[in-house]
Length: 67
Image 1: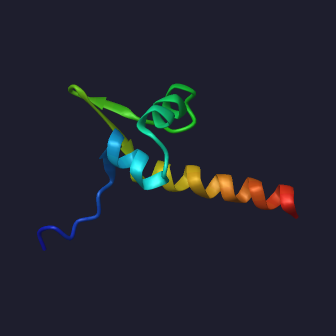
Image 2: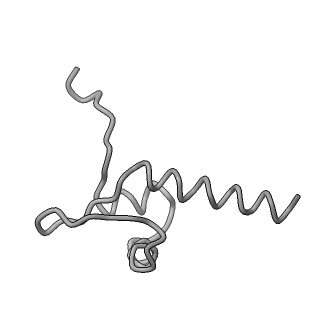
Image 3: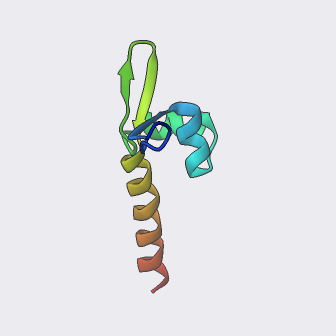
């Protein structure tokens, strides 16, 4: 069904929106290699799975410190 495919990668602005940071912060995370990305032509894309992993790892680390 058109429009129901799951996105596997998104652009910088959408990636930043999804994890709740600015595009500048996301660029910093990418530069530090904390979040992987790839250039496709003039556009940079970020795997959605990488965003989920980044956020989930942050929660796991936080839970270990609190527990």
